[in-house]
Image 1 (spheres, rainbow, N blue to C red):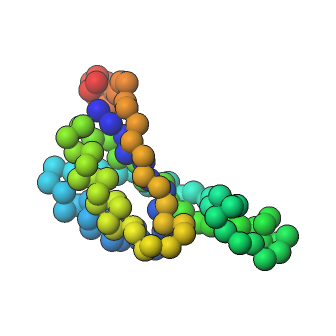
Image 2: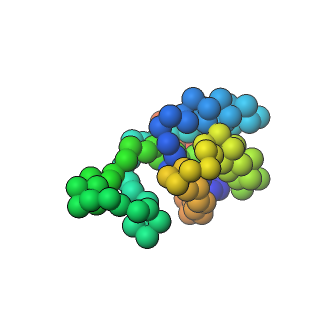
Length: 109
């Protein structure tokens, strides 16, 4: 089992939702509000105020999938959220050691 996480622009959420729903047997997604900034070396700041207030609204996307679904889900996230601009975000994959559903206490992994 894998967890796919991504940081994306909020204005790409509808495109992302549509892309994920189009994947057969897509299990679901959790979205968190987040804030962040790009590495300082990547962006030319104009003032001290800009340096101190450069956090921008983002969303963190979390999806738990079987290993064979990682590639299509990751690709859907990238395609739906890509603008080609600094700040498009990141996607990464994490191994899940164990997982248990709370509702019926079933151990899933």
